[in-house]
Length: 74
Image 1 (tube, rainbow, N blue to C red):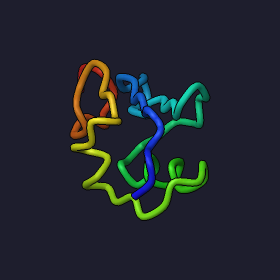
Image 2: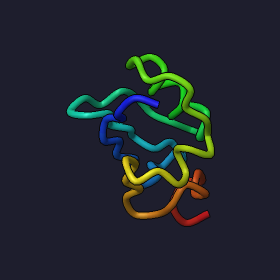
Image 3: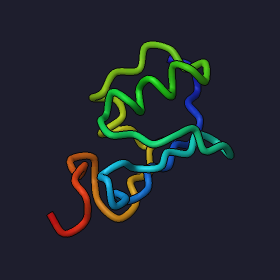
Image 4: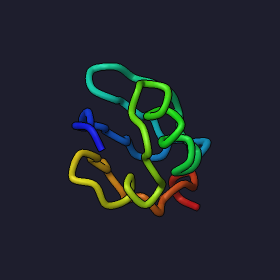
């Protein structure tokens, strides 16, 4: 795998989606790990799997970890 950009996944919003930043760009709202993989593929990263996203040092999970996809308070 090539060198990966820093990825930041922000806490869940009111609808459960999580803002995702790849490098210095916000790339969208993720509702599943597969969305994050899709964002990375669109930015040129290859061969990224959901398991990579959950445990990689280049992914920063803010607020809560990769298992939290529900709106706050649910």
